[in-house]
Length: 371
Image 1 (cartoon, rainbow, N blue to C red):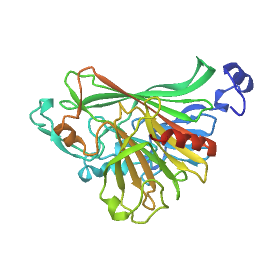
Image 2 (tube, rainbow, N blue to C red):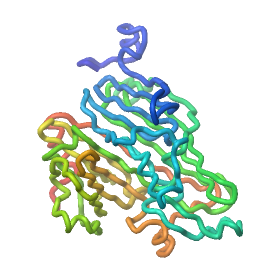
Image 3 (cartoon, rainbow, N blue to C red):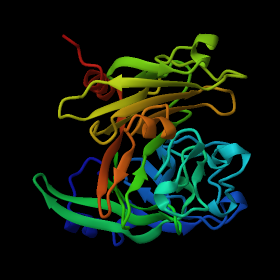
Image 4 (cartoon, one colour):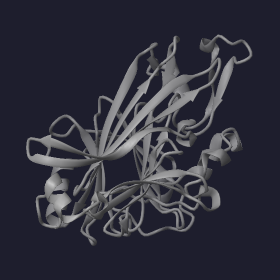
């Protein structure tokens, strides 16, 4: 940190409280639609700072580096989940709470809403279930099980890990029963956020499971000339608005009044080490943010372009299922059915890249020459 390698005793000699270097602090938001939301403020001391919204599925809200925001801030703010109307607007009320670096989709449904069979729950009055856009989990509060700072010994010496962990339960009587345990980590002095999720079926009947990260990047990272970078092998689907508007997905324009969202599903190559990823790069600022994940956990990937003036954002969306969604997954047998006691784990990492040299290395990793 600040040009020095500091261990626990070195730091203690220089500061009576680790908060002088960084750390995790629990606060409660107190005004407007955000009133009552618990948030964990992470500061790594490198310039990386982000908020974990405990009462919104422990999603990451605001995120910045050295005063430059990269987590998207929409007009909705970080709305309290008690204000959420899941069944309103034909399932599109999710858009009234849509803001932040991450908004989780799931746990039993992602993508657009609709009505699907519910006879597996064996409750005759519930023959079908109707889902809204991207499911319920993003608007469920977590039970916070711990947070803080922990020193660890590693191969390269001591490191201090900033961490938080909580559990989100999505359940109803005679309906779905799924639990998400979410752990978020960052190193003191580091530029990386690690997201470790485990979804388990704690019950006694098979449960449908779909999962998606809606990762939303905004200004000033996103600006005229910013680039989308990913090891795209093939674009397998795109929304009709792509042909209508003639706006490409690689080099991005300034905000466009009246723009209609564009969505792509890309098939990505694996990277060295078996992971895959994507990034948004702002060469003018020498600033980029990447996301990497395991393609075995998230075999599908969507790119969301929301370039409308006032809503300006780009989304990176690793997903367990293709863009056709819930009903299609049931029809083609790609739906994940978690057996009683079965779990699935998801490990992803965000990283901030600064300067031309770091960005060149990122470009080489995400778009290596193909032979």
